[in-house]
Image (tube, rainbow, N blue to C red):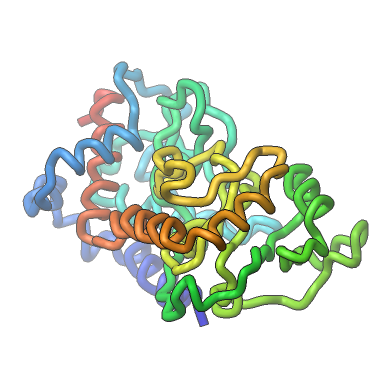
Length: 318
């Protein structure tokens, strides 16, 4: 069974939140950066990718002070707000309490008017005001260990997604019931197309297929991370949004199987990689190399802290 351990995640982060005064305030910011990982150029590149601020920004009164940043109360329809908060607070606690910031939680698809910490941002355009951190990672950052090789999998595309955005509906209208596709929607309450309601399928079972559909939802495709860590091929149009996973740096037909935004070439692309397994295997290996960047926890923590440090420097607080 695949999935991040939510109990362990919340236990660790809530402990860090409620006992920060006892365990973390004595550790100064210089202490945090004293053990610098190697690959300085690589780290600087990642930091500048997530935080593209080049101009100084003047702190305003309506920004949030770290001292006033408290865990949000539970709200119906917002089950993940606490995860966003805990992931951000995990690093903010190392900075002085009087520092101020702006953050926007949820699936962010617009570029804020002021420099703002977000989980996701549009790839195109001037997105320098979108400071990307790895927020709600308990849901979005999931990787798998796939024991089955590509050549031993089914010659089919599998897709199990919530289907209510127009672009996903369009894909299902085109390919539900297609002989090369095993599609089903996970939003069971949807009655417009009851035939799309099929049996739930675990990640383990989806790994039996050579191709896995990774269509963006409100922002990014949530399943893209674990698919690219598997021995199956991610199939999708070029992404329009990105997160800490740096979807904007993914190369079509190098990291994933690219299809047209109108999906018209899907069958052609699937058959091509069925007939060219060596090329398929190369894409899988390239995807694994991209995923490997995020598996060094110590380095990821350091890059996150450095991204925040640059934010506070560009707001003239550090």
